[in-house]
Length: 458
Image (cartoon, helix red, strand yellow):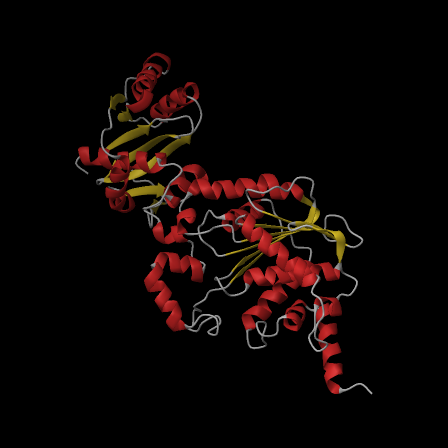
């Protein structure tokens, strides 16, 4: 006769086969508890995503709340649903990717030592690691070939095709979150290496703390939205809007407040509240816009910062002055060579009937200014614009920072300036007060607008 405990055990096993949270609870009941609703929500979201026709799932969750653990459990459960799946995971470095791989592999191959403790083979007895093919980061299941690969931005994915791609926490710390070149390398690795391995119809899961607007999660959400892919986004804050904690057993309010004091509000907000660190660290917190232009400008002016190096942008801003306020009329923000930008700037000065153009003469700016003046006079038959050049000797970062308040209070942009000048808009809205900025050409030229207004008595 079968006793009640045995019946309960078989019921748990059957539930674990069908439901991902039941699977997690059967194998790790001390962590996946019934009263941890956020884990139930997380598991249900991942299962629903897997069983849907959606393309990408982005999960932003605070540290130490089980996101990496749940991701490794998910890979195990997926193999139980379909042993023919090919799972590729990407982590910050080789050490973490190896740890993730071992968690998945060891979970599947756990040897049953206690008849009362449920292990993976009780739930999915048909899923086993292929003998002789259990390398640390690349292994196969019986009946499959290259079932699992764990890699990192410094690793390799050559020759592996994935049906499920899982990215787990790529950013190490705030320093990396503030470094645009690091974020760009992450995106290049994701698009050039990882996405190239994803098979047709494959699914992507990105699980990470939300560090920066330009981190992998942010870039992926924007990119796949533009590609019209089916996206899911699950965000969990440690401190809820009603003042309660996501899970007080894992992080109490007292501990959270202590971490905020120790880390600083910006880093803690990114770590625990999924508020990108650069939102709090941005130099420009807001910009003024206009729907209609004033009718009578007292003058129309232009400021140009030519590209100092090959990877820099030329930024030319034209604005009208009305009651000592600057109304931006046109922006040229480009990496194109001078043979293209010289006539483009000259044409803009001519079209907007600019009274005076100031051009920084550093790094070839003087020759640029002379050519713009020549094009205006000889090709456009115009002497309306006074083109002058000067050497900018002041510290660039100090200039940008000290003039930021004036820029926010007295420069007006068209209401649709993000659509009209997207690269310039990005340069202005993401520039950081501290940290490494990939480009400062937009804020530099905009600071030139402020400095020109001072000269005009604005």
